[in-house]
Length: 179
Image (cartoon, rainbow, N blue to C red; front, top):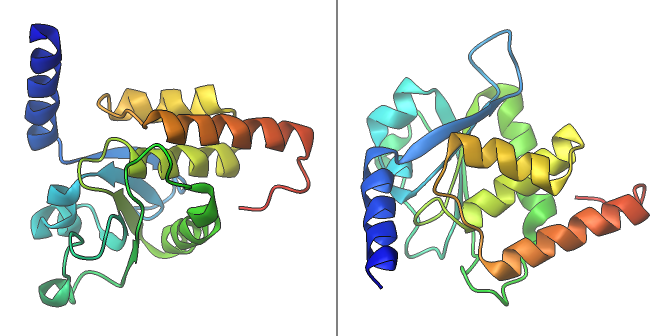
């Protein structure tokens, strides 16, 4: 029990110190094209968004918990909210196409932050599947990239199983997977 409490305390401390992490740069020639993964605190921190040229935010939470960008109009170009619960029976695959398209369009113009409440499970799963698709890499590689940059990630078992199924389906039917 002490180990679990120590681990939980570590996650809280890390999450407060690192509300977001730079995950990948898709455009090495300028300051645009950077993908960030973080928590709600990062999404609500004006200075973080401004300093990192984040103009697009993908919130993976219910709308009552999503940040309100009324006072951030000068820096945020677009913000979408996709309701995804952090439960093992939540189907994330039905949201992948919309999430991936939003990230793709955002990266053409500026930097994007993908976040959920803690930046651990929902947002990590979307970023992992995005890297799998965009970089044409397997789950282990994508998970490794994200975990190296944001060590506290931990998609729930249901999300992990769905990502494994996506990987299996992509190997079996590479032309038919559209997300």
